[in-house]
Amino acid sequence: MVSFHSDPAHVDRAFFALSNATRRGMTEMLLREGEKPMRELARPFGISLPGAMKHIGVLQEAGIVSCRRQGRENLCSVDPGALRTAANWFEFHARFWSVSFERLGKVLAEKKEK
Amino acid sequence: MVSFHSDPAHVDRAFFALSNATRRGMTEMLLREGEKPMRELARPFGISLPGAMKHIGVLQEAGIVSCRRQGRENLCSVDPGALRTAANWFEFHARFWSVSFERLGKVLAEKKEK
DNA sequence: ATGAAAGCTAACCATTCGGTTAACTTATGA
DNA sequence: TCATAAGTTAACCGAATGGTTAGCTTTCAT
Image (cartoon, chains in turn brown, orange, red, cyan):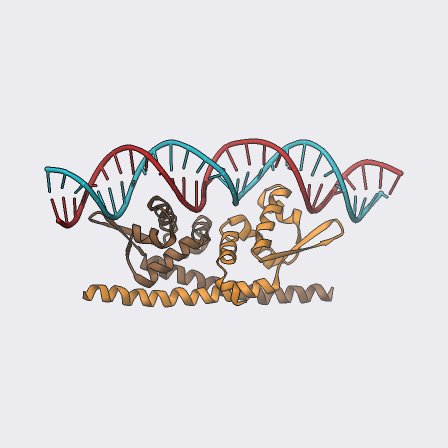
């Protein structure tokens, strides 16, 4: 949504969530292999279950992951809606940085003239 | 560089640097208005000079900003090379997330068949 | 020559991070 | 039914964050 681009706290959370290799790894795993229970998210990263839960909590607060309880398992997956949002977000910023790059060239050229 | 995409620690640093609204604000300011001395980066955010220096330090370690000393001023700017890298990085990830989104659709469809 | 401006460094502080272990609840399956 | 597996919660720990103030050096301008 539009608020995703403009709400700084949300952007903070999204960037922060992805600033950790374990969390990026979990996200990529869920993307690759679909829904996974907690313990399977913990195992490949060699961390305890509570450790994994904290990471998933951060990804949830960033709106990247959502979970549903099934029996004694808690199945986590990348939220399809949030993923679409993330894709849009990256596209937006790719454009932003490219445009800024062009502009930076001009700013430097102007400086040189002075 | 290729290493930018694959070195997890570098990706960590880049995401982390951008996970703070003040640092994003400083980066955007430097993009908009070009080179600025430290104190002018501190003022609009209502923080002390040492506070601004820490933020700029984080942006430097992420390869986003570089500084040069001129007289008693320390002029900061977005590194043109790093900016190009950042643009590439965002483009790469926009593609990654989009592709992952397609794949997620397929994974869910397969699950439904079973 | 000297006082003020810009920056740097160090020290401090409260809070958050990333991880753990221990103890508890709930669901499963033999 | 009852041991065990999955998850949760709470408490703890060391390190990093994001900010500050105080004091130092360097540079500029009068």
